[in-house]
Image (cartoon, rainbow, N blue to C red; front, side, top):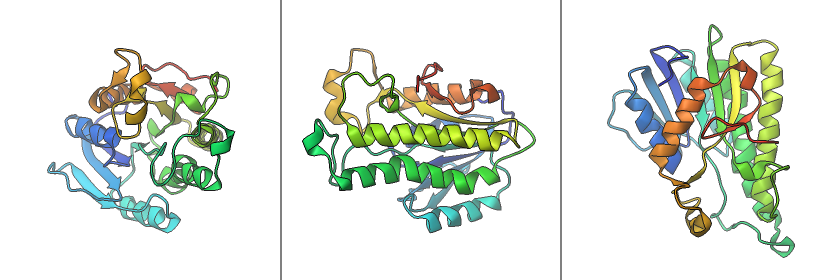
Length: 245
């Protein structure tokens, strides 16, 4: 894992208490290339590995994100940052099936978690990343955020928020790429993963296409290892294939 990045790596996982986030932490802990995993979540759940530093923070608060970045700055340059957060349902909202179901609350909550949070994380964490070699900033996106791939409609807020995230990542890649040629900024589509986010919708998933969190984490980390600056600004799926905008 992470042969292209070297050894003694420092990795941040934002949303480390979620299904995919927790699986990413476990995979990273098991890798001999990783020196430190900074696991960030609202719960700040302790991990038994001495490799893991747990940090409690509020992903929806800019002040909290800034404070987390200040704490991490003392640990040295970061090699990889993975934003493993997402909101499809819960907190009083659910995916809209039609126009009548739209609500301001649904759009606000979806954009806050799926777009604004990753953008603000980039604001404070990108300056902490290494400049002397390959580094990767990745955020979980979704194929449903692709405008050209939208053929069945529905899920207005979630689709729109993920499309906005993809545009944010693309814009970040252009700005940062002017100065830091080896920094890669990407979105990652993890596939349909057996987590709380997807449970109500798993009935329509084709056989063999519902992934365990561990399998998805393994594939996503392999994609991070394989990407180059030429991929920066793109959204890649779990198999390393580009998702059309």
